[in-house]
Length: 254
Image (tube, rainbow, N blue to C red; front, side):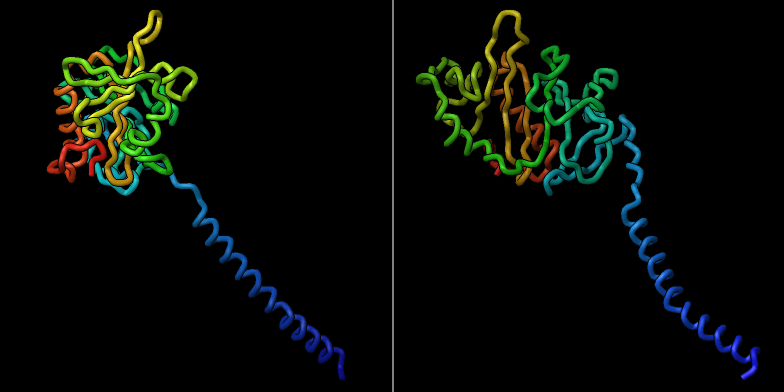
């Protein structure tokens, strides 16, 4: 066999041996491209203008309609699904506060739900909507958790509210449970006590809407007009969650 023939044979064999490598390279390239496309970070949607009309949001699978001007966190100021929404309203109008009066909630964190509201001049209602998760529903806490920590018997005022102080050394030390003496499940709240050199006393009232919990923070002094407070909270729930507009006024929202 001539040298030219031998060289040609070797060349053809070498060319055929590269085909599997080329196919493997093409497959790996396609795989890398696909993974990069899936994992490539996406830019968040632009926040809606603060003076834009109310838009729909979903928290824990529950639909709400919220005004952007009431949303404290600019990153939350867009429609769609959210893990939580932090809101603030004027009391008793339940209108969003002036734009310059909205706390920048680029600083709002998950711990804010357990912290006293900032810059509350007595006319602000702070609202957080988040998934209930593994926590017991508000009514279940009223029935089975809070009674373990009461310090004494309840005292009932002439306005129909009952007050039960929590014992020192418990998770609710320094707080009182305040509720309607005749209908505790209709309205109850945990409230801090007034003390010298301490922030004004505040209350937490919680409502369950499906799998979402609405936490409302307000000054304890508002309870001097508790019928107005209960009616206002009912109105706010209907305003944010229209499916609850015709429901019975109950603390668990069901």
